[in-house]
Structures are given as structure tokens and as C-alpha cells.
Image (cartoon, rainbow, N blue to C red; front, side, top):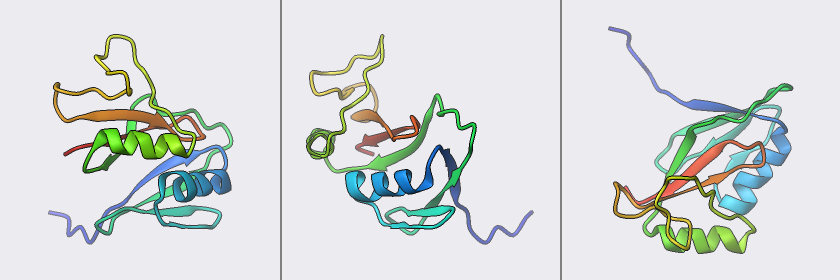
Length: 121
């Protein structure tokens, strides 16, 4: 077996400074700036945000943020100009959350078009 000493994730973005500002100023997470930014996650993990000139947004959820209440998270993100994505065929309520079909969850996109969610785990 491999002796794994740690792990982290990464996602490409079209513009690292723009991504760092978004995650820090809109979502409220700690970010270390740099050519490759480090997005700090609650609990000690991190995600690197790296530039990719021909960036194509992920078509799947790249990051799930656990919250106490999805409705409150939607309101707080909305106060920062962010609104939930709506997907055809998904039973989402008027706030944009899907409830009662697994965890309560709502999806958003970052400035690079990558999908992330807020959910109650």
C-alpha cells in the first residue's frame, strides 16, 4: 500500500486573481493568493486554483460546501450577488434548493463556470 501523507484537490480557472477574490469575498473562504492560489477548506483541507488558458468549466460539481441551513446559505450568497443554478428535471423549490431527495442542496457557479454546491450533510 502507498503511504499517503495527505491529499488535496485542484480545479482550473480562467483567471486566478478573479477566482481568489470570488472565493474570499463572495463565498467567505480563506484564500492564499499567488500564481496558483490555495483555497482553504474548513477542517484543514485545501483546493488549488490553477490557471488554464483554454479553461472549460467542469460539467459536474467540483466542490461541496457543508452548511447548517441551505436556505440561509442561499440568502447569504444572494446578498453577494450569487444565485442558484436551476437544472431542468430537478425538483428545486422557489429558492433554488432541492429538498427531500437526499441532502438539501443548491448549486452555484464560480466566475470560471465551475459548479459548486452548498448542502446539509
